Structure formats: C-alpha cells, structure tokens
Amino acid sequence: MATAAASDAFVAKRRLFNALFASVGASPTDPRLSLRRAGRDGLLDQDLPASPDALTFPPPAVRWLSRATCGFSTAEHVAFIALGATDEARWAAWLAQQLNPAAIVDSACDARLASAAFTTLNKTAAQLWAAREAVGGSNYFQRMLPIAETECATLIRRMYSKRQLFEVMTEFWHDHFSVFGWDYDGGPMFPAFDRDAIRPHVFGNFRTMLQETCESASMMYMLDLYSSVAGHPNENYARELMELHTLGAENYAGIVSNPDSFANMNLLGHFTAWNGEEERLRYVDDDVYEAARALSGWTISGSNWWGQVGTAPLGTFTYDDPRHDQSTKHILAQYFTPYQGQGDGTFLFDMLAQHPGTAHFVAGKICRRFVGDSPSTALVQAAADVFHQQSQAPDQLRQVVALVLQSDEFKTTWGTKMKRPATSVVSALRALGADFTPVPDNTTTYTPTEELIGRLQAAGQRLFYWPAPNGYPDTQAAWSCTGTLGLTLKLLPRLLEMHQVESYNNAQPFLADVQAQTLAAFPNATDRTAANIIGYWCDRLLGQRPQPTYGIALDLLRQEAAATAPLDLTSDSTDAGQPQHVGIWHFNPPNTLSQHYTIARLRVAIGLILCSPDFLRR
Image (tube, rainbow, N blue to C red; front, top):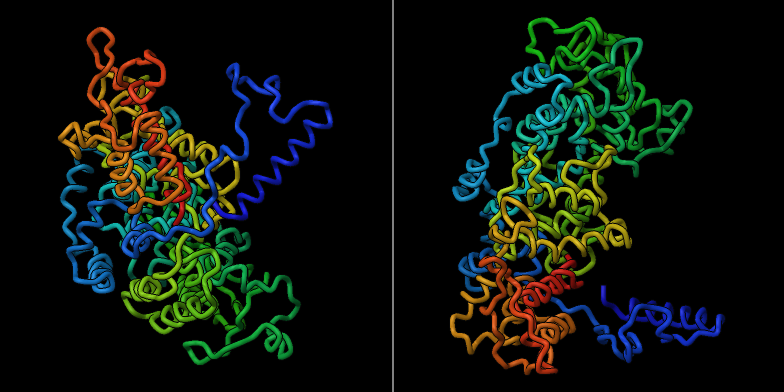
C-alpha cells in the first residue's frame, strides 16, 4: 500500500542498493547493471510518483458496498442510490434487503447457472455416493466433478448473484468450517456439504449449522470422525470442533491435571450454564479426549469396512449405537450420564453453541472480516453478546451480522485490510462487467476457467483448496507477501486479455471487452480523451479518482498527447482479416506514442488501475 512508511522503506532499500553498488565500484545507475536502452540511466528516486501523505477514503457507499459484497460495481451502486435520500437511509434499506436473501429475485444468476448445465449439484448425498462408487478410481475428472462444479457455481454466484451479502457470508462460513474440497473421498460429496450444511444456515442458527456440518460426509472425511468408535476414538474432529469451530484457541488452557478442582475452576474461569450447572470457561486436552468419546459412533453409512449401517442409505449420516462409547464423560466440568447414546453428541453441541467463549470467538472473526484485523474490544463484545443472547433464535446469525454492519466502526473504517486473491479477481470481473460462465472442462482446449482457476491456485486462494482445517487466513499480513501478491498482480491485468471458450484465442470474444464498453460510454469520438476514459474506469473500478493512481494511469494512456486530446480507439491491425484488438503500429513520426497500439494500451491502463493499492484495499 502506498503510505509514508512504505515510501521510507523504499528509500531505505535504495540506499542499501547504492551502498552495495559502491562497494564494488559501480555507479548506482551504471547501465551495465541492467538491460536498459542506450542513453537511458534507469529509474531514479525523483522519477517515482509521490506517495500520498494520507489514505484516500472513497465515498461512504463505495466503502460499505466494497466490504459487504464480493466487489463494488456501478450497477450495485446505482441500485443503492435509488434506496433513499441519504447514505444512512440507503444503507439501512440495503441491509434489510440483503439480510432477507430469499426475497431477492435472482433470475439472471439462476439463468446463468442453468446455462452452465451442471449435472451434480442437485444430487442427494446418497446419489453422490453412488456416483462416486460407480466411477471408483477409473476416471479422476468424473470422480471430482462434484467439487469442480461447486467451485464454478460458487464463482458464478459471487460474480452475478444479487444476494451479495449472502455470498460473502457463505464464503465466511466455508472458511470457518473449512473442508479441503479436493479430498479424494470427500470431494465427490462436496455439493451436499455446501448445499445442505452451509448455505441454508448462513443467516440462521449457529447450533443448527454446527451439527449439520459435523454430519456431512465431506467434514467426516476431512477430520476422520467417520472412523471414530468406542475403544478407539479419533480425536481429530473433537479437537478442531473446540479449537476452530466453537471455543477457539483463545480459550485453550493446554494440559491441566484435574481441571475441575475447586482451585482450577477458579483459575480457568467458570459460569452458570443454560442448564443450571457450573461450566468451565476454558477447555483443556482432557475435554478434547472426552468429546471424541461423546461423538464415537457418529459416521457415514458405508464409509467403514463393515459397510452399510442398518437401513441408512449409503453416503448419509447415521449414528451407529453399538460402536458408541456408552460410559460416563466429563466435559468442561459438565457430567454426562452413561448410556445416553447419540444424546452425548447433541448435548455436547448444545453446550458448545451456548458457551460464551464460542460467542466471543465467532463474533471476533465476523468483526475481522468486515471491519479490520484489529476490531475494537467493544464491538467484538457487543457482537458476542447478541450471539450469546440469541443462541436459540432461528435468525441468530442475521442479528449478529446486522449489528456489525450497522456499527459506526464498520462505517468509518477503511483500508485496514486488503482483498484476498479470489476476492480481487471476482471484484475485478464484477467491476469490468465481464461475461463469464466458468465450467469444468476435460478437453485439450485451454479454457478461461482452466486458466483462471490455475492462476488462483498459484496465487494461493483457489476456492475450497486450503488443505488445513483452519480455513484461508483473513489478515492483511497473510496476503501481502511478495509471492501471493505478485501472482495476484499478474492475474488481475491478465483478466483483460482472456477470451471466452479458449483463453488465448484472439478470435473469441473477451471475457471483459473494455474497448467496446469504452466506445459505448463515449459514442462521440471527440469525447474519447485520456482524461475522460481514465476517469470513467476509475469510477467503475474504484468509485473515485484518487491520486496518484488516476494520474499514473492517465499518463500511461495519453503518452505525449494532452489529457484532453481524443484518442483513436477504433483503428486496428488485422491478421488474415481477423482484428487483433491492439490498435495500429505507429512509431513515425517521432513522439507519437499516443497513436501506437492504443487499444492494447487501454487494457494496460485499466490493468494498472486494477493493480493499484486503491483497488486492493478493503
């Protein structure tokens, strides 16, 4: 990000390199040190654009929509403006709409999903299981088609759905209950996890979603719960249930001998639980082991060597009573009476969902997603209070999200987070008005879907591809390293060059035809000036015209021409009669770069805006 601190760091680096050059007797601008054109001395400090002294804040609507949607777009902004006379009134109306996604007509997105002709997304868990067993290991593409189609459908929804806040929170809950979608056993079952365990509960009740995710085959395979039996309980799911899904590592006390003694109860904290019993605030390793025993026998019918469990359809959740540990258990100082069967697990979920530590941990994550990496203690506690007090409400999570998005802290902060790679790409495609329906492909054609997903994977955030159960990181530091940021910056301008059907086939339409959109925005050739064009695209992509981004993109597009001089965006080179979408070669007479490959330079200038700190901020 362009800040005074970043500028100081750059100057410090330049001094370091100058000292290194001097130590070997070389000039800091010695042309031998790089491949520079003759007569050019390279980039000097004074050639660089000045770093802004302060962060440029976009208008309120742009800030709010950028963080509560999958990316700011002018279409979303126009609809927002129509909702009231003031930004506050519009925001209240927008939130009311978005928090009731079932009432939003989403026919255009539904039509695009239908055009993709996905074949696995509506299959039941039993049908997905049968398809997986039929394929076996003979055809990897067909075996993993369910997760591939879920990945593509999710991209379509994020780009085109009018239920934008719903999609943002769906992503949040997939990170929270993270499952590696490409697991060999769980991947073929993934549509059921997304459709049945996550999406119905996005604005619903946490306790309900907690158990639904547990019972999904994809989660069972991810954390090995399907194989947990009496005498040999598998603690993987139980540990992540406490550390990642409910109480959080912030409430982990480690290994404590006799944690329920009077002294340790005072040391670890306790409270009167919903059932009137005293319950410990912090959990220890013994709680994990006991939770694993409480959930023994929870499995997927057909997932173990002994085959189908009773009459439960293969591939569906079932409770296997003979393989459940029926003895007493102690978890967080609560006593589990013996022979409660499946009730051990449901009682455990009741405890954890209503625990104040769960409320604080989950509320803190929601605040970090929308506000910043370090939300105030007051906001987190306010959200946690709603989470805890409304633990039985069917719209518990809707109330928590509403509180955070109506807070002054959300409305007044900006730029403390950065977009993750997938969000950067989706927001770019939304702002560019792209026409893109990703679908899995098993042909030799290099499709835009294949290229986009491959580049997202290289940048570190392919959808449902995080291998660990903690989900993709949600802090700025995690995504600002040179590797992932560099690959994101390569991907964003590449979006402007990708073609439909076959990504590098110039005969195919662009995913986002910015030349056609620019010509449509300025039908009069005299209005096609660099100042107008860059202003238009800054408004489209950023919702504002911040410096130095606006000035840098303007200078690139205009070259030696005046900012107000019209540019030729229609003359084009051809190859065998096929337009090349670059403009014309024009080096003579000298100093006429403004006429050289102008159509290609338009895409480069827009790509530069996409790579700006202003676009990457949240």
